[in-house]
Length: 104
Image (cartoon, rainbow, N blue to C red; front, side):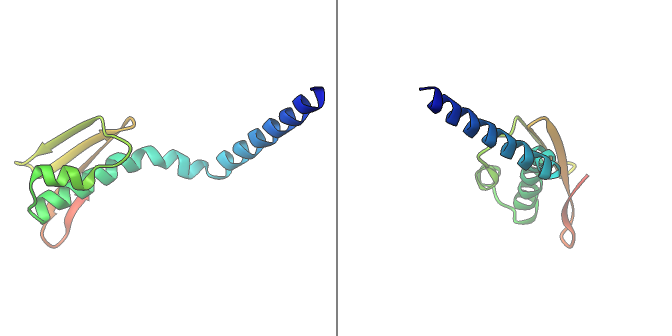
C-alpha cells in the first residue's frame, strides 16, 4: 500500500509541475482569453445585424458560444453593440458599408 501511495504521489507531483510549466509558457494566451468572449460576440453580432441585415434573434443564435455572456446592449440609434462576458466589456460599432464594424 505504501508503494502505491508513493507512485500516486509522484504522478500527481509530475502532473502539477507539467501544468505549472504549461501555464507559465502560455500565460499571454491565458490572459487574453476572457477578452475574446465579449469581443467576438460584439463584432460578429454587429456585422450580422448592421451589415447583413439579419434579425436580432438570428444574430444572437449565430454568435452564441459555449461560454455565456453576462450582459448585452444593442443601440440601434448609434449602431453599436456592447457585450460583457467573463468580466470584460467590449463595444463594436458600425462605421460604413466599406469598413463594416470595428471595436471602440
